[in-house]
Image (tube, rainbow, N blue to C red; front, side):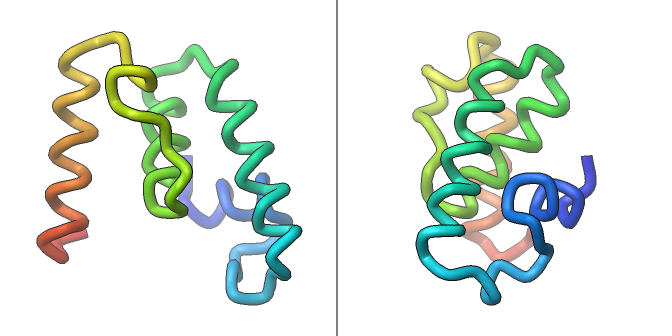
Length: 85
């Protein structure tokens, strides 16, 4: 799942700066709903990563049943914090 494709799917644009606050919140809500319904682990992780970037990701123990997936998410957060991503 391509990052720009995710942005277009949930927000209607790849340019989040062009969105007004209500459109941004609506897109975040759509993303969260679809995240809750997603069963494919790769797509679910990509959606969670976008939600994390946007500040509305669920806690890891809620988002991922598999401990390996939680560890991957922690690694992703560490990469973002270190500026590697």
